[in-house]
Length: 233
Image 1 (cartoon, one colour):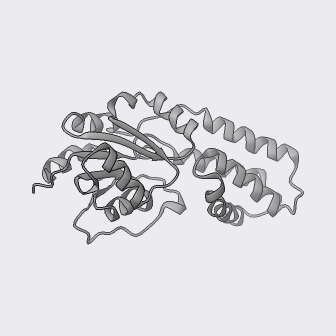
Image 2 (cartoon, one colour):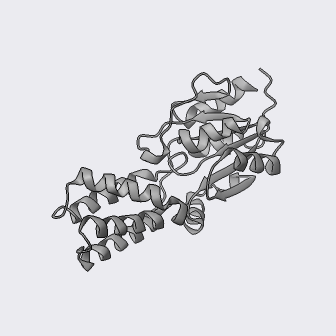
Image 3 (cartoon, helix red, strand yellow):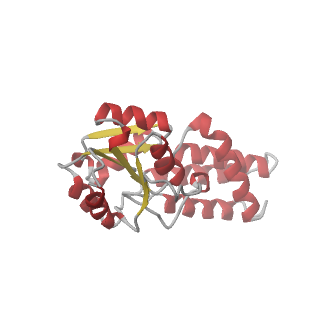
């Protein structure tokens, strides 16, 4: 096919290691704590609305999630939320920040399979300290030629990263589980977007796949990445 591919970017959360499942567990605990005040579905809808409002203030990650839970708890209880509930929400966030990293299947193998022949770059968004912690615990840090922790994943951000680390977005590929953050903006930047579905997906990361686009691909898991790259080479 002769794509001239020279660089491959990897998302981190729910692409290389588990992440969203811990948010889901904490949401379930949140619903239990507020069960006397509102129904779970209503509560979680209000939480999602708060998260959407607050992304511009807090960015992505656990700390912003906890602050959104506290804000939602105050709102749905008409400011009557017990201090003990706030304490439990803070504790839940602390537990999330300390949770051990568990790699997804084929994560290390996929990176090792393309490292050396291509520049491999970790491109992740979220809280700087938390993302650095997870990367250190993952044991994958030494495999990357570059590491970028950004506040947003947009087409201009991808162009800048691939201009600095490689030969431009046109000769780069982004691999990740988020259609909205990993795939679509990478394609808009001029690169390849490879979607790797994950069992859990945050509602704010949903988007329609650009199925008809020539630079869109989907693989069932990271075990199929090396074969895909070989096909495109």
